[in-house]
Length: 233
RNA sequence: GGAUAGU
Image 1 (cartoon, rainbow, N blue to C red):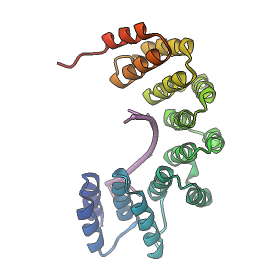
Image 2 (image 1 turned 90 degrees about the vertical axis):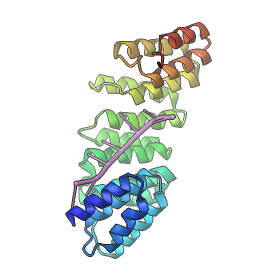
Image 3 (image 1 turned 90 degrees about the horizontal axis):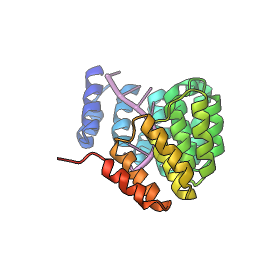
Image 4 (image 1 turned 45 degrees about the vertical axis):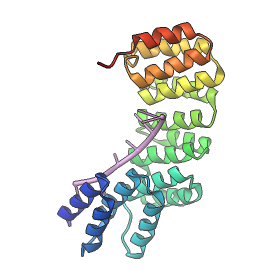
């Protein structure tokens, strides 16, 4: 079962989902890891509904979910906006105690934030003892996506106050909030942060800086940033 | 032997 689960995983990750599934079906003793390997393959290729169907099937076989299964289901719910099922899974997670797991906590934050239930996402982050940069970026991305621009800034500040360095994703979200608010002064401050933390050589960050300056009414600075970006050779 | 955030 160990070897076959590894093979299922390999095939599933390479996008050979059919092969992974065939292999999986022929296993005589499938365990929770085999299910998890198959589900992560499906989720990584965007087959959310298939993951939910596999979950039904797994439960019918009497296999108890573990943290990886929960992660897959939560991610599937998050991607399809399945807040109702997500809440049910959340309840089950609370009963099993895996809610203190960092990845599970972060995925719960992502679920609620992405589905627009941002206050619930914030509550989970507050309760997550070992929250990290991913926890904050999941929350902040939710705020940015749903137009809570002021909360993007507030939480950008909060994460730094507790000593967590903003990641590239967070900077992209904050720049997006600057654009939404046409906040040039804020954008300039963020630009200084970005330079100080050496994210300015990153092409995606650079592109967002250009976008921000162009839309906030400072095309000359947009041009400067453009010129500073590394050229392909 | 399977895990979480931006594009």
